[in-house]
Amino acid sequence: MKIAPSILSADFGNLEKSVKLVETAEWLHVDVMDGHFVPNITFGPVVVKGLRTYTNKVLDTHLMITNPTKYIKEFIKAGSNRITFHIETTNNPLEVIRLIRSLGAKVGISIKPKTSVDTIIDLLPFVDQILVMSVEPGFGGQKFMNDSLKKIERINQLKEEYNKDLLIVVDGGINKETALLCKKAGADVLVAGSYIFNSENPNERIRTLR
Image 1 (tube, rainbow, N blue to C red):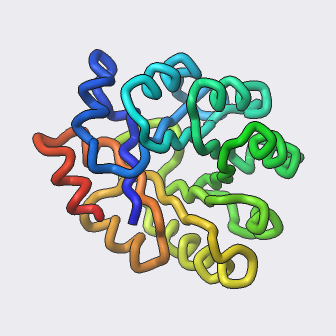
Image 2: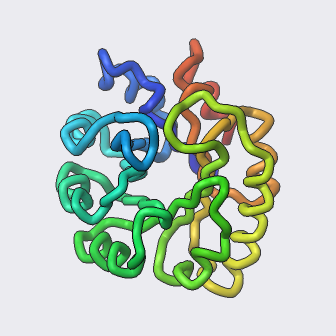
């Protein structure tokens, strides 16, 4: 199990300190929001570039934005290793996948809670990860939606036929209890923000999730 602390819950007054507090994690998850696709605004490539100066960890950038192709190059140039875009934001997902690959990053597709797994089945052979949103994207600290477990189970079954190397990432409402449910359903990577950073010992929380 890989753990990806979401910097959405980090201390933006001292990101370098926050990164050091989660040194035992494999990835850092970067939630990019545009105030249009989701009702919140976070940060752009400049923050990713700053993070890259503090850490050599995998930067897993989640684009919750309406026009991902417009900004993908800048986020990869800033230091993102993995780029995940939302299937709901494009009519030509293969074009987005090819663009990310051509720029040397790993590719992920994300689905919102109300989006069916059926919308992404044909794309499974072409991506590195599927991000299952277990809350409505936009804000941290939300309650885990149990319906997402069925999606994780289904994608885990589809992996056998379409892409055995596919990683299933789960983001939203992750804590000690929901992490175990996700693991049993077939998750490979857990994204957690408030559960990790709103703690006196973030690395202990990471160990608990793992």
